Length: 422
Ligand SMILES: Nc1ncnc2c1ncn2[C@@H]1O[C@H](COP(=O)(O)OP(=O)(O)OP(=O)(O)O)[C@@H](O)[C@H]1O
Ligand SMILES: [Mg+2]
Image (cartoon, rainbow, N blue to C red; front, side, top):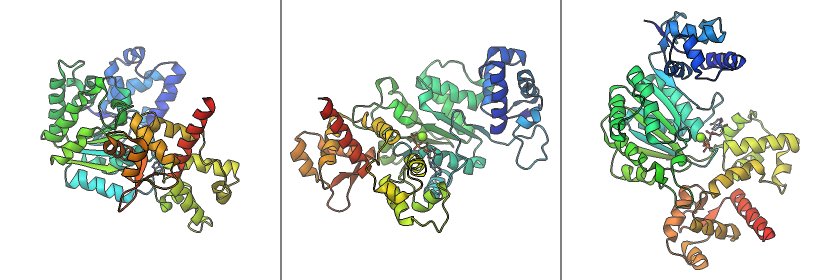
């Protein structure tokens, strides 16, 4: 029986038709009318191949007549039905990254780890908005032909590991997937079996969702401790797939697995370079304010999300005048403060003290100077944690610690607000 899968553009059309009907995506009324089941409707939405008749019925009953336009046809065919690509891709909830630039060095490392070294687990970490998700999706799109299945999931979507495992098994095992798992061990064993039989690129995003805030970086939330077994099994069990784990924070045990010699790699993502920023802002090579652009990128640590906010501001409130913007006093605004706040809310008390101390110091401080000012135990671990969060920067050579200018401004602003309130 021929099978068909929907294209991203096709799904957008179906989504419009569904809204006109007032149905939700997994509406029982819809699956009943199409003589199918809700799980099949889910597979349709995930762009997984389903039987051609069912595909047509799902389109018909929602009011899409030209179902052929919904299909993602194979790359090399003449739009013949039933010849969908040999791999299945399930991007549930992944953002659109149609405009992606640069990052060639990172892509080369990642491809080398995943394709040549057959790493089983690759961790990508970095500040919010730095481009972790965009990079990983661009990577996955560039190597998808080398896998049988590509799955993207954000851990924000799941309330437990068993829920995640059921969902992953639905994609990998299809009709044979269980609705419920008898135990976590059984679920993990089934997943590993699937990952051994099929080469799967599994992307789990937003790892911080399973980690604890208010403590040093990397401990699991009490209700998410069992994720430790998932990562350990994926790193040490023999299989031919790869997990890319993305997060502002990473669990501590991934470092341990790497140190123990498992096929685990990690990439700490920093900002974009000036050439890539020029592409994002669609600036010509002869752009007159190149030196100012360099300053702007350094100031915002090449963070594409913050640079996009700032660029909008420069165009709309400063008539495109970069120098004027850079000499203004308002370099931090709501969007940027909100992003920094998300990071600061997760600091432990000691990390917070360190950051406040560095924000009020005119020069970078050494560990001893920080110890003298704060006088608490556990300073080395706490500084290490703030560095791994990307908040504190360590200078080369005889190490000293400091904050980027924007972070300093944010911390001092918060301190000033707090003192006005008191
Ligand atoms: N190389 C790039 N080229 C073009 N746009 C990019 C690039 N990298 C990131 N962006 C854009 O910057 C924004 C932030 O990127 P992204 O969502 O990947 O960040 P993130 O690190 O995953 O953040 P978070 O921790 O909040 O999930 C997005 O709009 C994304 O499309
Ligand atoms: Mg992201």
